[in-house]
Amino acid sequence: MPAPGLRSNADAYDDLFIDGLRVPGIWRCQEIGAGYKLKQPKGSGDDGGEPRITGMDVSKGTIEIDLRTDEDEQQWEAILERVRPLDQVSKRDGFVVSNPQFARHRIFKIVVHHASEEKVVAGGPTKCRLIWTSTRYKSGKTKKVVDKSTRPGDVFSRPNPTPSDWVRLNGGR
Figure 1: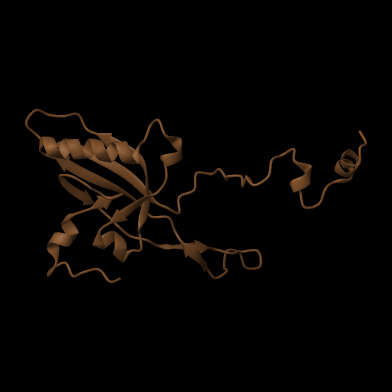
Figure 2 (figure 1 turned 135 degrees about the vertical axis):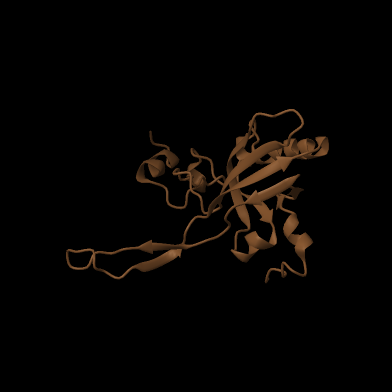
């Protein structure tokens, strides 16, 4: 889907939604983009090989937010609860992001891995930040696939019983 033109649809660029919640206040992201992953193979002992594109690189950025009203601060707290659930580890995952500039660069999900606020000055805006990475972000750990359809000790559900299981099934030790 092509992004709507900024000149004719400026209002569409003003709103940023993270997991369905509108980012409150005035937000800005200095740079939104995506690039290629390059491999530089060695050619016959030197670094003269041709570079190879191996896919898309991880996109990173910082969303800076100025909160100016009490309603903005309430919406900020709702976003924090959503993107940083401190008591629910299973919900720390990528969140859908919706904005024409993000969509233009094919960034549809982000992982928010840091949220912060500057010290508040009386009468001034509350300055907040969300540091994000596109969903190609990997934590370094791989999740083991667990087959929940069979129990570990149930020898009747295994497709090929081991010889020791055959002995047990036939009344042996």
